[in-house]
Amino acid sequence: MKKSLFTLAFGTLALGIAEFAMMGILSNVAESLSVSVSAAGSLISAYAIGVCVGAPVLLFLRKMPLKNILLLLVSLIFIGNLCSSISGNYWMLMLFRFVSGLPHGAYFGVAAIIAERLSEPGKSTQAVAIMVSGMTVANLFGVPLGTALSNAFSWKWAFVLVAVWSLFTFFAIVKWVPQIGRLPHTPFKKQFSFLKSWAPWLIIGATLIGNGGVFCWFSYVNPMLLNISGFSVSSLTWLMMLAGLGMVMGNLIGAWLADRFKPGLVTCLVQFTMALSLVAMFVFSPEPWLAVPLMMLCAGGLFAAGSPLQYMIIKFSKGGEMLGGASIQMAFNGGNALAAYLGGLVLIMGYDARYPALIGVPMALIGASLLFILHRRYEKVSD
Image (tube, rainbow, N blue to C red; front, side, top):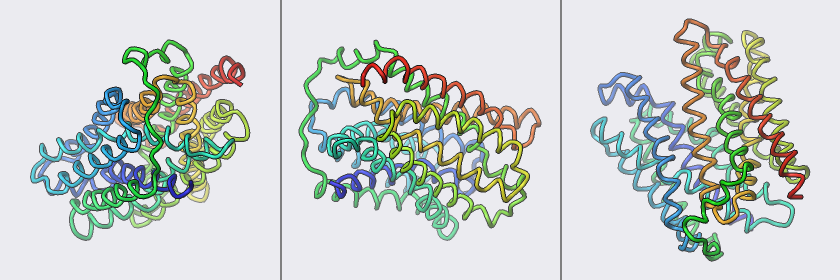
């Protein structure tokens, strides 16, 4: 069982590198394609738009066996990143960044259902966490490796890395993920019926707004570490690896707690803790010895809530599980974009790089409040 779950994580590892590596190679891409850094930043948005467009396509794939859907999505990861690696101009790269984003939310939606079905009794959230762990490992090792390849050779090698890894993932899924059949047939309209309840909306809102609060800070973590905490540019690689380590630990701890207690309550407490941590980051970031553990705590909180939220949306979206699972990734990416915009506004207004963390505090508190309502109104009833 564990081998099949780790195989699912291979796919999220590929997606994590594809999504986040662009942030580390942005300057190289801009210089190579003779565009401004701000224009190159639109390549990040193109991927996020692809995530949002691709997720609803699952509605038309529901009759296929789940393993076959997974293989189709991994094939699209391969094609999108291989074509990105051979793009000769800005607009061609923009197109294939969009294509690369199409399978992202859909993969998480399908893989979460498979992980839950393969899980041992009482360990559903931990199974989903193993699947999600590829995303955290991408931040720990994959993204720094992609950045190193870009600096040593060309930015195109970062996409070659994803393409090669996705090809390996395809054959690993063929060999190690069992056929578990299709989802029960549900008419097209009834796949949306779970949205009549407030429960999935509370989960989506907590993902969009609550996790977005952490992204307000994380989107501008580099200038904060350089200009506020006083670290050198050469130290950024190992600092980002420490942030990735925080994500790995947070993912595992959050899932362990969610399987032992109520996941809605656990994620509520996680997001409330994130609000306090962001306040601490704002106050203590000028002290390097405090900024690093706080950075790891905030990054860990982002993924400590992620796996339980992914599990809960499956639980509260009966009849529309694939759409529900994909919607979390749509909310996650939407929150990322919204948070980066809000955090950037305070910088444009002339405030220093500590202030995006402060903007994220009310967002994290709103997310915690939504999850508390979920726990009180739905979680106790369902249990």
